[in-house]
Image (cartoon, rainbow, N blue to C red; front, side):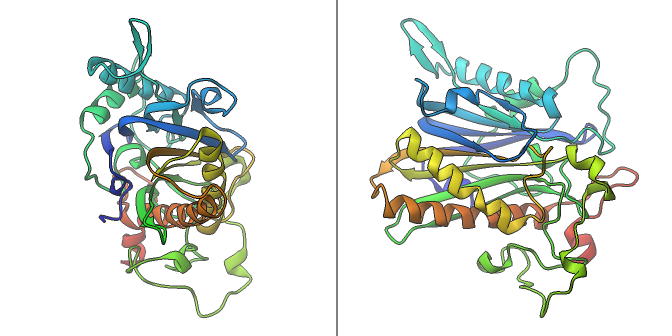
Length: 331
């Protein structure tokens, strides 16, 4: 166990980013098509193929999931992933036609100081292709891929991941792009809201404050004003080796979404785009009631840990006025 999404067998992750741009793409590839669904809690999501993931619709499995910066421009990242998959002969077959199925979601990082004057066409399709080509079972955390340009209210955001197993040995992993309007830390201190779920000091081991003050519970928003609530989104993908139906995968996404509330304060704002994808590779049978409940519980904890790890591992952008990283302030 590497404490990464790729602890689930048959899953690979790739990053591609541009430091001058201050943005990038992360691709989750499945060696074999995976059953997938989605849960959306934010009021301003940016999603590709979201309707396809509804349990009432026909296509059950996906070949990859693309996460990107760039706001709506970043939805093109999935086109690049699709192009790479098509070159491999991967996709949903309709007679002699093959169509790679690549849902995606984006976060807003257009005002982080990077050079977004890209000309006629945005670079995200090419970044998506590069991220797919780079996919591996090992990948970096922090200011990389779709997390390169991310931020939270008071610190640099980033990309994090975590994994765990149920008591029966079912594996679940999470990856998160943390670009929240709220905070992942408590007050002005180093403590992460996700501290009760931390394992082996994976995000600093600072625990919780000795006591809470009213100041710690005040609302802190990105830019210090509610008007900036559109400049954020947290994206997550949860993958398990359990055998799930599409409705069960959606329930897993719904339960896993509670991990956001354990790690971000406040969360699911009206103009957030908070999204959780859930995918299942189908290796291990589970009980449809108690087994799925436990799996969701473990997944939610993994999501909270992934969010904290993303901020913990981040490094500040080299632009004027950039937010400091957690390690700059507390490391």
